[in-house]
Each structure stands twice: as C-alpha cells, then as structure tokens.
Image (tube, rainbow, N blue to C red; front, side, top):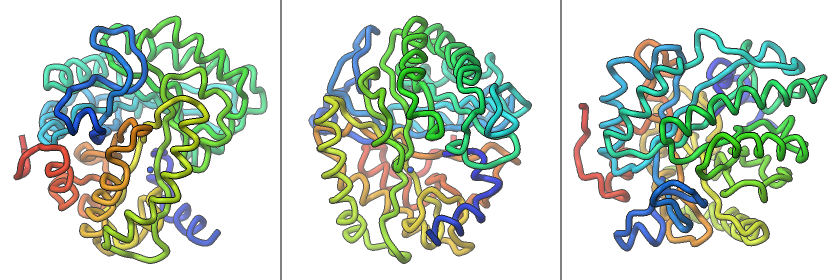
Length: 361
C-alpha cells in the first residue's frame, strides 16, 4: 500500500470511484512449511503457504521503538506465522532519476532489531522495501526521464536491503512494490533480480498491484508471483460475506490460469480493507467514507480466506496492516486498515487458530 495514498486518499478514492497469510492445504493438515518459493535456507522448499501481517514503518525510529515487541506479540497471537517489514526511500518527483532516505525511512539498526525480535517471537520475515514520492502520490506514477540512471539507483537501493535481509536471515524478499511505471521494462528488471540474487539466497517475489500483474514480463526470474490484491468486490457497501466470496470467483479463475502459465504460485503480498462503510468497493483507498464499517471489513476478511484457502496455486496472504505507530496514523484507528481489536481480528484468530481474545501485550 502506497504511503503517498495516506495523504491523498480522498482524492484517489474519488477518482477511482468515478472511472490489496493464510493457510493452504499443507497448513490445514497441520504441517508447518517455511514459505512460498524455493530457498537455499535450512527448511526452505516449495508448496508452503504464508499467513502474515504487515507492520509498516513511517519514521526512522519505528522499528527500534519500545512498542515493536508488543506489536509482534499481537501479530503472532492472531495465528500469523509471518510479518512483513517495509523500509521506504523517497524520490522528489515522478520523473527523477534517483531515490534517497528521509526522516521517514526506517533506520537500518532498527530494521535489524525488529527482524531479530520477530524471529524471537516465532515469526518469519518478508522484507519488502518500498519507493514512494516525497510529496505524495501513487508510486505507480514513477516514470523516470532517464530510465538507465533510475535503474542504476534502484539497484543500489534494493541490493542494500538484499544484503541486510541475508545478514539477518529474513526468509523472503520482495524486489519491488507497485512500480507499474517501470515494471514493463523486463530487461532492466531482470538485471535487478540478478543483482539481488548475488546478495540474497532466499526466495524472491515482486509485489505487483492487482491491475499491474498481467503486464510484468519478469515473473519467470522470480520464485513466486506477488500481487497486492485490492480488487473491488462490490458496487455498494455490503457485509454479506457470501456475496463477497462469490465476487472472488472470476478473479480466482483468472489467477489460476495465470499461475499455470508461469508455473509459479501466487502470493497476495498485500490485501486489506479499511473498517469503513464501503471498504469492499475500493479496498485500495484509505478514505472510502467517514462511517465505521467493522462488519464489512470482517466480512471481506472472511470472504477472501474462504475463497482462496485450499487453492493449490495460492501461496497465502500478508494482510495490510497492523496498528499504526503512536502519533503517526492519518486515519482514525476505528476507520483504519488495522484489524486489531475489531471483528476482523476474530476472523483471523478463528481461521488461523490464534485463539480468542485480544493480546494487548
């Protein structure tokens, strides 16, 4: 989920209204598997299902803050087995040739700290570095004037985190997220993937937006297809889980065929719904309405898990997102993406075997 959408959510929602880890068969049989794709790490292998939750960062010190351990315990208490971390660099304009750290970029020491905490909590880690626009806007709009210079800068950025992922034992790595303005350049992206593989031995994915994945030409260079699964499921607000589950049918049919063509499973690198009335009409929006819709959020969680669980081509889901850090949330918690303390968390606990009652840890 693009951090720029936090500031421009209302405009994005209006424009789009006018014109996104769960268990698979192995986990349902009680078998623990480490992650989708092929890994050279101990225990790595194919056929795993990923059930996880993203804990993004918005400031330099988030991942080293005292609250990090509590958040990770809460995530694990849902029955999640994975957590995704999202260090973010920024570029000033969509046509610029480079990206840089800012005061909103997670510090490397904090990232190492939180990965260690996650492992000690019993969670596996996907590292999913982001590039955003410093002044807001959708990262899909990044279209550098000098593509060669941008890709050189991007390779330096992403291999920095690939080295960090390798040194900390992160179990999976995403080479990019929702960069639709560049992702059709297969030759340059293949070079990026090779550079990452030279630094990191684990399984790789790319997190394509739901309206981008068909045009990505370098899936065969990766171990698993990643999709940020923010498909609209309804044309009006609804908390009817059965109706929402039916809305997944044509999507899953298309995804099954896509997976078969590329001989790779599909991981929902993100999926999520705000707890607002109308969330299922625009899952990508932070600001669908000002009315709470916890029942609609919960129904959407239930529908996704019911529709996808057991599909052999499906590698799982990392939900967007757990709680915001104190004083960083731009959306009131009762309306935000987090399922924490809401009926959607109960759905996760029931589906994932996390028990009942919130862990406020």
